[in-house]
Length: 351
Image 1 (cartoon, one colour):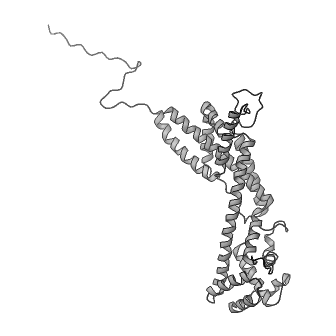
Image 2 (image 1 turned 135 degrees about the vertical axis):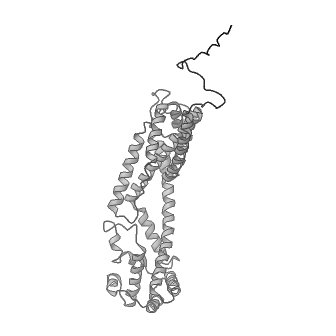
Image 3 (image 1 turned 90 degrees about the horizontal axis):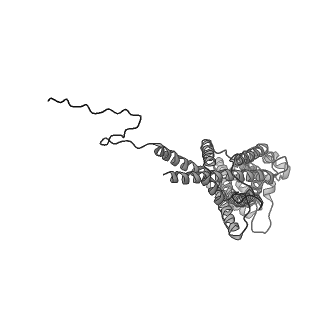
């Protein structure tokens, strides 16, 4: 049973390393996103698909008009960078105001002074006669007609239409993040020499290190994962959370005490950081790094759940290992040396 316990602890140690590396790569992704603002680019693309014709035949750039609207401008980052989040209510009101402005012949900055028409029939007429983009006109007329004259329901239909596109935008962003996370997983594993094969061998040999990592894993699993910054949060908050997550993930990996990193050919032959000296060694090293990269690409929530389940399994196995064999009712417990011997009483001789 001791061998089985060692294998279980090695597996937990590997999963813990995968979790920390996943947290590190996720933090790097958040940090890059805070600087590059890819989420805002996908949002702009989604709004362009909603408001602008996609057949390549021109039409008005209504997406630009929406982004220049007074309700949307406060969501800009630093006044210049595109917003990464626009509430559905803001979108519907801005679009409603643009339609009202069209009915008054207003454009650009004059749209705000046009107010909002609450007559759904008049709004429908304006859209049918003034909206230059064919695809947008068809969509809006369908959403308005479905409301059966209820202006609040018409607005709700437009908000739901926008939210459906935002779900699609979220899918685009998630796929791009998954690709970036996969690339970072391989890159970080190669950079710090996080070789699954080497780490497993080190944990199997070093009982003290294994026990230390078990303790760290149990402490880490007791704390829920810190969520990433929401797109609705202000830029300063997103930057701060991304930086803090990056620093915490790096500090956690450094505190493991694993022999990570690279060492030259002059390092001892038993040093896991030593560069391989032959082709089979490099192939094994490449296999270990690829395994780590693929594992990290699964994401921190995946490894957090797996680690939690295995720690529960270990907690049920350890007590049975420590318990000693109990004597049965039919078989008395063996005497120890410290136990006093009581000789059988002699039967008196009657003769």
